[in-house]
Length: 366
Image (tube, rainbow, N blue to C red; front, side, top):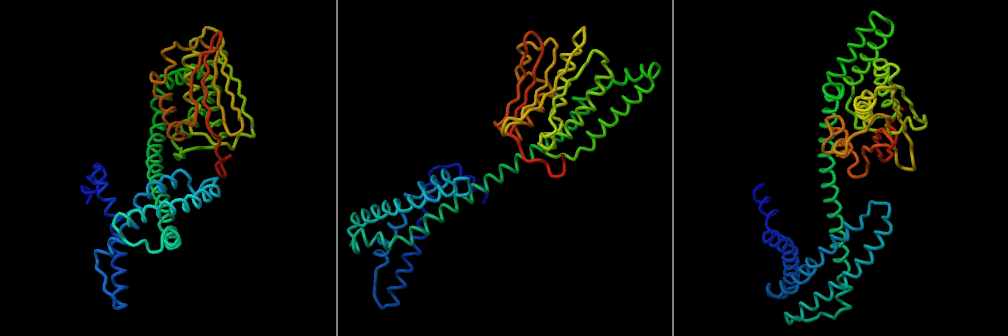
């Protein structure tokens, strides 16, 4: 069966043949019903004549069905403009009924069959069949779209789950890479003698950060407040490690706490700014994190006053694991409806900007 379906789906002649056979079935049913009706009345009617009468009726709809299908896809009945779409379908239904009458009468003329009362009688007699056929095709088109969209959504969900799982691993293996862990532990060991309280604070922040990563439940989105909590713990470690070389400005309006964002969205941007911006400066560096909302768009900016990046490093195809993983997750979540870019600032510095659509808050998560 799978091979047959595969062959049909891959061959246009077989598709056309299957389409013709599909419309032949109701023609045969109609011809059989007419034959039984004539027999019950005691009248004799050749099957060939009944076929000539009934088949043009259904083959005419076979010609018009693609138009109905395209109209159903173009004007869905489940969107915000469903009333407008319904009105368009009603008008189109009437117009296609006129087209159907023209095709049927033309076929009967070619076959030299009686007109059976002309166009008016054919129009009135075809109303019931027209309504049934037109709206059956519309419903089937909607059902197919729901199925295809559901399958695509399931694929996206599965891919997104894999991306999130990989993101958690990357947070330990790559984003919180051994170099960062080594520097942090080295700083802790130095503070153990000079400032035990500070060393204890760093250990606590590091343990909490790792706990948050390991205990992540794999949600596709989380409240911004939870993401900021993760970011603040990460920055606390970096501030302790770099001391006066790092200062951080946060612009995070509390009214945006419940807006949802992908988990671990900002950490790769911050890591990139710290390692490739602040750490390369000889003097003090400044990190600026700003979150704003403009209507239905959420903008997240991470900027630094480091040396910036060369032109080649601004190209997304050259990004390393953290930034590349973030870009792929944004594509999975929002498709093309997002912005993620790195831009050099003047006279120096780098801006990482993410713009995503605002989604409803996570229930109970803010």
